[in-house]
Image (cartoon, rainbow over all chains, first blue to last red; front, side, top):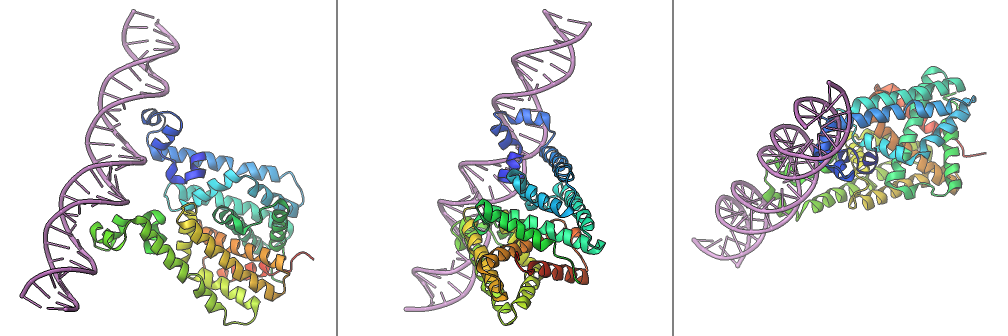
Length: 175
Length: 175
DNA sequence: CGAGGACTATACGGTAGCGTATGGAGCCGT
DNA sequence: ACGGCTCCATACGCTACCGTATAGTCCTCG
């Protein structure tokens, strides 16, 4: 996961990882039949750890608006996780990555949709706004990584930014 | 630019491009001293074409809210451009890409800020909302590429999505 | 027309990664 | 104590890319 976060999917490779671990190719190929299996193992782990975990943590709260705010806060808190997330999006065309990324994304947007439904949005509006919220998340972590100077750096600036985002994303749909 | 859009920065390479063009390495190395120069040339071209061009097209309208809507529409219209955009963000850690990406991003957010100012936002709120709008843009093209099933596919669904986005992004700041 | 510049082609050596082969260590049960 | 299982190390061939060397073609201009 570290390699994925640091160097993208290309860094999830047999020889570099073996070196990093002070081992050799020979031993690596005993544990994994080939590089694809290694990548699959990393993806499987990511999918399991990054779906239910956060949802479960947010689900203890009752007020859906508060849940949204918590969700955003939690999503941005884990820097390592967001770097992995970006690495996988960067590798979205990879045939091994694509299905996993699709599943996780749809599941997350699905959960966001339930929150918007509980806020009182009609189904179609809830789904649309959930997607919009997710793109805001994606774009923000992308920007934070690529051009961090464009985002607030201090804590209160960041809080203002989040507040404004939640405010914008919870404005009632049409009229 | 095609190679960049299709295969990311890694595809902007001497030998693959030479083959693609029906030429040989030898000829490529006459035009460019090395691979880095080739990449720089592509980046320079991108920076020039993708900054003033769109801004100029939007600047003919007067109403800033309408400009925002137009800007969003224009930003999503050019599929090729958004793929290049994503390729560069994926390669954001590359020392050649980083400064170019930073310049372009800050310039675009700067322009968005002027629009929000003209809408009537106080400076700080305008800057914040401009950033938020840009992350929405980034996240949406990211999602469209990675998990296109999560976004509306038909024209009216897309229009509704854009309308909702503009609506959310133009809600007045705090109170 | 012929010399030099613009461009192309072929061949070479180097690096980084994949995957395979093969030969070990070290431990475990009989 | 010894055959077998687990795990690791070394060596090899293969591919794709980088960059260099060198020779060739063709066009233009004096």
